[in-house]
Image 1 (cartoon, rainbow, N blue to C red):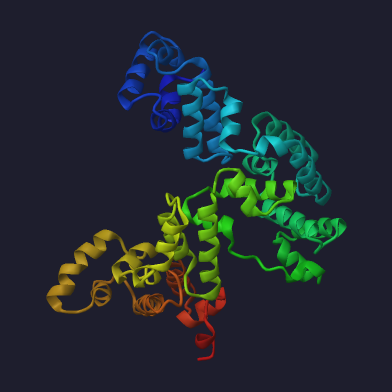
Image 2: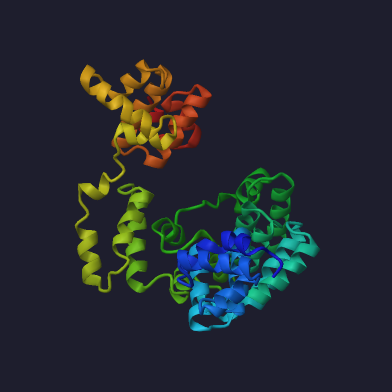
Length: 404
């Protein structure tokens, strides 16, 4: 290995340690010995019974995939555990982590790649390289091309949406290609392309569905959702079927997620609240347990988005925790609010304070979520906008607010 032991250890340290292959002390000792001998780091780790050449090669390949965003660190750790600790073949371990991908790979790469090629989303050379890497690793073509930098997130989302509209009969194959090409040339989303060209698929509405709820709940990564959406199209199945077949969901969590999504649709829950509740159902094994949790949602669940002013301020990055800590005693001694104290000491101006107070009120009233409140405060301050103007800009203002 041409790289220096210390450089390799620095690059792979977190992956090796989190997978349980080595401890921090063992890795440090191995680096010192490798430099002294001199000897390749993988050989030293192998001599000490920590990692053989195949394990080190797998670690290096996984780190490359992490760097190119083809796989998350958590998933890479699980793959390395199988390779290094259970002597499983690298490709087998990789495919075990993404059930169903290998089965559909040939059909998937041809279908997705051909659509992208015809629309000019990816050039032939990158497509060829992506196809080879996809077949060698078992990873979906879309994620491979994304990791290579050959396409953008918007390119991939647009292509998958176009294929879904073609499958559902909302667009013809030629219309799908035309819409994708227009979106690429104007650097816009597929939905914007359909709207600007007045095409029949323009009425499609993007929605927060089961897959998105699973990502927000931590049940799967965004990359795994994209892979599942590709399989959904290839296998001509619902996303719920794919998630269950791939091991991301079971009948209990699927039923619970659909019920929570119905609450989101009716406006009784925000998306982040639904995700928080779904997390509590992760280990539920019976319908009785699920029904008990869902039937006992109280004020704590409905008002889980409430936060105090100091937390909102630190979330926006407008003040630091040190600022809050320094201003709090002064606020208490002078018997004035924290935001007033921060204004007096010059940390916040009057306009920002107004935005924060208005956002806090809207947040407590359930008009916006915590994430939206943070965005609104920053946007209002940077663009000299009121809360009402900001919410209307992002389409977050409820009817009652728009009419005022």
